[in-house]
Structures are given as C-alpha cells and as structure tokens.
Amino acid sequence: MSKPRVFVTRIIPDRGLRKVLEQTDATVWEDELPPPRSVLLEWASQADGLLTLLTDKIDAELMDAAPKLKVVANFAVGFDNFDVPAATQRGILMTNTPGVLTDTTADLAFALLMACARRIVEGRDYARNGHWRTWGPMLLMGQDIHGATLGIAGIGRIGLAMARRAVGFGMRILYHDAMRSEVAENELGAIRVNKEELLAQSDFVSLHVPLTPETRHYIDAAALKMMKPNAILINTARGPVVDTMALYEALKARQIFAAGLDVTDPEPLPADHPLYTLDNALIVPHIASASFETRSKMAEMAADNLLAGLAGKLPPNCLNPEAFNK
Image (cartoon, rainbow, N blue to C red; front, side, top):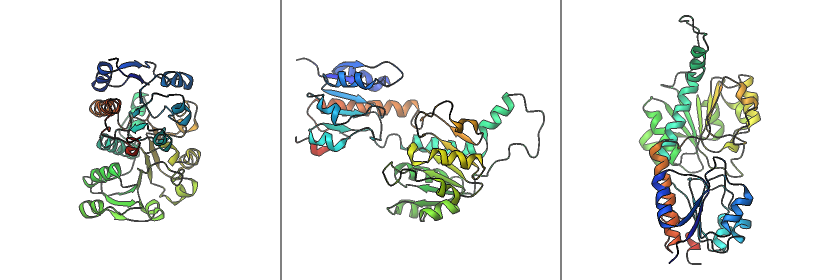
C-alpha cells in the first residue's frame, strides 16, 4: 500500500519530522521563508495531509483545490491561519498544539518584563559601545519589579502562568478577563478588575488575550493614555492586539516607560520601522516558544495529530471533531 502524501511547509525539529518522513510520502519545504501561495496550492492539490505554520493560510480556496485532503496539523497553539468552519463543512480535520508552550511563553514574557524594567539591552549596548567609563548614580535607572503591580489582560493558561511567576517577586496581581478565574484569585491572590482599572493601576501590563475583532487594538492611543508614566507593556499574544503606531508615539513621547514585544503588527516588523529607533522598545522575533524542548514537543504533537488523521483516527488535538464523522 502506498504511503499518504504530505506537504510540510517548513523544517521542524527532528523529533516530529522523523515520524512524518518515516510514515508518509512527505515533501518538506526547506526554505527559511514560507512557501509562496502558488506553491502551497500546488502541493496541497496532491496532498492527503498538510503540516503547516501560522504563516500558511488554509482557507476555502485551498481546500477546494485539495480534493484528497484529510487533515491539516498546525505547528502552533494558535490557528488564526485556519478557516475552521470551511474545513468542517468539507470534513477536513484541523489540529493544533495546545498546552505544551504555556510555561515557555510565560518565561519569555517575564524575561521581556525584566529586561525592559532593568534596561538590560540598553546596558549591554552601552558597555559594548565603549560608553562605560565609571559607575554613576544616575546611570540607566529602571523600574523595580519586586512589590510592583502586574496587570494581566487575559487569564487563560499563559496569563495564569505569568501570574505564578509574579508571585515569586511579591507582585500585586490584577487581571481583566470576561471570565472569573478562581485559581488566580484563590491560589495567587489576584484581583479581577475592569480594563480601565487594570491600565491605570498597573506598573506592568502583560497581554495574553486571543486575537478577535473585539481585542484588535485592545491597546490603542486611548488605552496608552490611561497607563502610568512608569508603566511597561508586554505583548506575547498577537501583534494586532496593539496599535503599533499609537505605541510608537507613546514610547517616543515617554508617555509610558517601555514596551517588550514578541509579536508585532505587521509581522515581521520591517527593518526600517520607527519602533526600532527607540531605546525603550525591545522587540524580539516571535520566539516565545523557542526552547529546544518545547519546539520539539510541538513538532511531535503536530506529527501525531497529522498521522492520526491520515490513519482515519480522531487526532489528539482536533479543533473540529464534528468533521470526523463527515
């Protein structure tokens, strides 16, 4: 019996890729950049399964061009690139890799918080560029983390993990979410507040909301004006949750102290974007899940999801199990 045909849209860690290569007739796109749309459509038209990234748009057009397609496995917890209802209509299983990157993402969010507060990158550059001549009482003063107030927008898995890290620094924790979190309140002492209170009272605001029409530009010019002058904004959620140019203007005017961004809008942020000119903007290239162990686990989960769907089984992390019966 011939093996199912699969297109993998980027090289992924070996723990998952090896499984796919051993059990399917797989073609792997080896370029650093995503496959062009025309290439994705061409390979999808022949595929029984796809292993994709957030950069690959899996919509009705692609599905209609892929008559044999059974399953699409996203190498991500997010699935903004999927048209899940369209897949369900066509009986195509859609999967993701939830849970595995929770703590790793929270680690990065807290690392950005600390780096912005204590001006770590500015200090590195100051020393590297030969400006360090002596100890000075006014040199590169930042913000205290211990005892400060952390405001968490979105108290899901990652937001909750962020709150747990804050406890170790004796931080006061506020959160805003449509749903109350008894775990956050009872175990971590977090206080639920409205958005305006969160912004006005927090020394650090960390964003962990999903991207929806309601959360697009959750942080806009008006929200930034509500924040303290010493406040630091952290975004490891989705780029469009923040109005990029409004943030640039606020940082440039020192309306808030700093921002640490793992995600941007647009993404990637062009090299000539004005945000890069600001010392109080720390931008990293969407690396929240980028630890060796976490990315390997994601690869293995994506492979297991893909292979289960190809074998006619319900994948472990299926986004639309109702499509299974179709």
